Length: 200
Image (cartoon, rainbow, N blue to C red):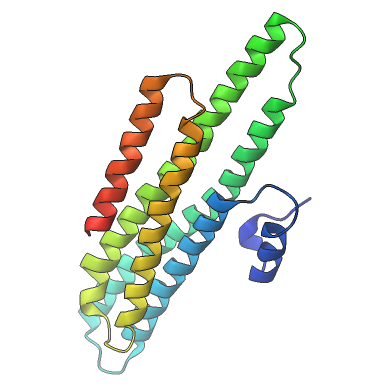
């Protein structure tokens, strides 16, 4: 039984990612980039608050904000696994029988549910990245030590890239959803969240 991705070393995950298995793929990899960005933010806070003479009240504030980052980091790990699982669910749907008309209806319905679920995961990733960028830029960055400020900037840029590229995965799945109103709604949600993320 394969480990969850958070239980793997980076090398193990990269080996799985580079194998001939179609999952994990781009969506899962984007989540892993988000995890790395969270770790960078975590480092900037830990370095800053550990400096001799750093204001204790600001230190408590930064550590409180870091808890939000760490919760998001755990969520990104989960979404990395969920993305791969969602793709496997789609492939399972393709294997369903399509002999009778009833078979075909069942298969089509299951695939539509799978596409919807697969579109929701990158949407969750985008929303998480938006919140992380807001925390990093508005609440954390102004209090960081100058030697680690650039690391926080890098983390923010990575998170914005994750959000922007996750929108491709929203589109890839909504293109297969027959309910056009639902597909448009999901696309709009993703586009708005990406725009808000990039504006921060």
